[in-house]
Length: 188
Image (cartoon, rainbow, N blue to C red):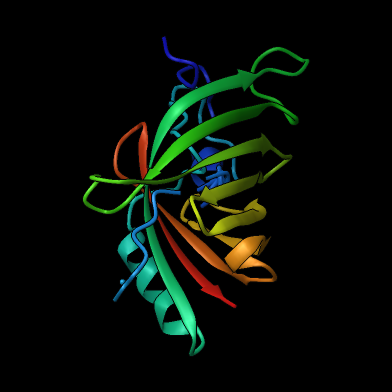
């Protein structure tokens, strides 16, 4: 049984959108150009997480992005993760999932960075905070709550280096249990 197999709140886990910053977290393919607690039988997904149907969320974020917004696409692959079960035993408010990821370009041919994040179970939400380090560019901070099982977007709250004082959003899409796609729309 993997570290997340016992978590019964798939929707909450899926509600964040990446470390990205592992929301947390980033495998940057920068353009040069482009809740609710789930039944105990469900497995918790990897990373910030979200339910299926992200193409619509990405399209919506792109349409809402102001002029001058940079679109960064990263493929995040989990490197290590740990569940933290707070009393009482089992799924309860305060339980968390801490993870680190390698961030790659879309073709997964070049590592662009790393991330680190923590997602915590709230009363009826899933709250995640993460930092993505993009090699040679700086850090991007994400932090926010997921309120329902289709919520795949988390705010970009700041950064360092080339990302000092950025804002925007990160949309999270699952590829597998240990791989996610992060679409960041950042305004400088």
